[in-house]
Length: 266
Image (tube, rainbow, N blue to C red; front, side, top):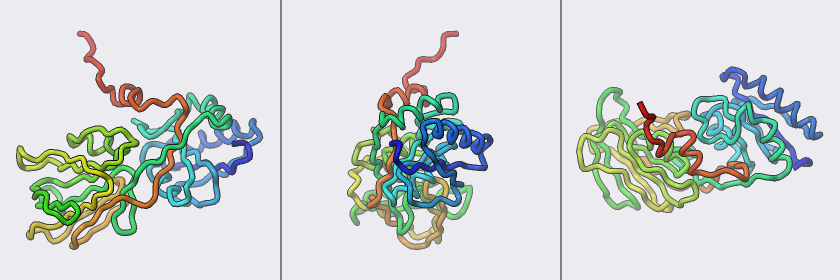
């Protein structure tokens, strides 16, 4: 990796991001590796590897951008959960050593597409009227599936299954599964349950007749309004996440989501 072209993407809205970026740059210089520092609002192509400093939102934004250039991204967490990150400020030097030595793998993560927008975690569809439930008709491959009276619908990738979809009662999917999850948000019925479907299915969401507009969000960062039927499908782009060799998905569930951890004794 020493002859590769590196960049460091920083989020200036996060405290200490630029300082950690300077420290990372200094560590790379010790390995005789140079790197350009980028603002996440002014990303550009032309690199072989991207270090991302910030929280999960910073990583999502950077990963979406570089998916079109097949560039791996490596997250360094300065946020709260940091589920997508592989390192922290405390483990910075050790992580750089592993990256430079080539002790990492790059995972292709499936993404979703709505019109010209892509999402690594999820698309969320809600009615335009805040504070009230909306009616949605769900079709898969143009075949009617069900109607929902709910606060919204989450269409999630396996990567995003541990995010909003999990909070709304959806299942956790292993990241490499070729599947999507459809999760209703607070459905007004006892019968509505999350659906896990193959990732080659085409998902359509439309009005039941009383809704005039819907609001769609991509990874909770880009927002759109439409009154037309919404079609969501698998993107032709894959996000490339760089993971250290010793990364284990189940240990991440335990460490960051406290999965399967018994309550502390009183």
